[in-house]
Length: 466
Ligand code: AMP
Ligand code: ZN
Image (tube, rainbow, N blue to C red; front, side, top):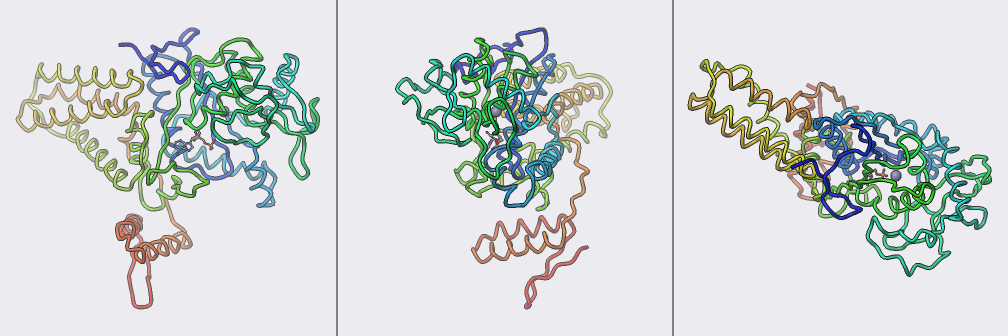
């Protein structure tokens, strides 16, 4: 069966092919750079990376745009608190995001574009909406009149036919199922950064950013639009309302949404404070590959509950894969080809490809890999695996790794500052007090992994570098 994806818009699994030529035009809502991304965000970005790699494995070229939201309510608040301009403030987190993405081996989209570099494109888009009668002005700000767009709700499958016309919101975030006219251009408030434009002095709302940049780089109709599930409403619904009002054409053909990463059955989020950044995990001694593996291993439309046990299990899986590869490369197998095993390799290829074609079923794809490893390891033990079979087996591992990308060990050195070590030790003491010995041991092991030895003495904990 052909490559197919679940499309939030139609609520169906549909066969996928790009509209034009062989090129997939894809847009991804990128991070709001007011802090480090957490591994929940990175789950969504890892899904996008697997999607990119699989589209390419299936012979398509990519034209992929990701935006960086570098102007938004929280950014303005945080930058002001740090006595920095929004540019200074967001530059550090944009750089950190790109670094974290590279650490997790996420391919870079063809275009990474910043909102603040596209203010004029947004103004032009808003002017087109004005000309079409989709906007109104209140207190100097420009709002989108959603009652004018009868298809509003078609992505999130909400019926908004009874909405109150004229109820407005000018926050960038608002509650689910509460459809309101949203702000396109916010009139300048005191102290806030603002741009001069024909709409008056102000700044763009969050939603117009993505419509303007997506259409600028990819044209009026995209093949795929992605993001986390929390973005489907209102953000993506609003993107559709804006873009389709401007062009009269479908904005995106396929909408793919990644489910959340949760922790203790709650969504991992900055506002709940229940998050781990990639940086935290690296400092605790976890390598990037198991983190990537864990994030990729659960199919993107299923919830993934993060645990440290899960992370250790991911590391064990990678060890098995690496040991297997080493065996293939170094063992002396008898000459010849076992044709039955050759057929087994073909079957593994087929199962792997079929799983990923099926809406990126990464769990099934990994199952195909591990079943194959188990079968061929037994064949090696029994002396039935012959020298020429290793070629096909290595070829299969290469295909696996072209998507999952976990076999090469990371060479990145992580060095903890004294301050960071003290912080981890304080956390370990608190964990012990709370009788969370698993966590306490984890911290000790993580530090040991980086050559830092703890000594529990009467005076407290001492540490030294090995
Ligand atoms: P933000 O920086 O908040 O705009 O989020 C960046 C991306 O991460 C968006 O696609 C969100 O939908 C996604 N996201 C946020 N929290 C989570 C989570 N806990 N699990 C998976 N994706 C998330
Ligand atoms: Zn967006």
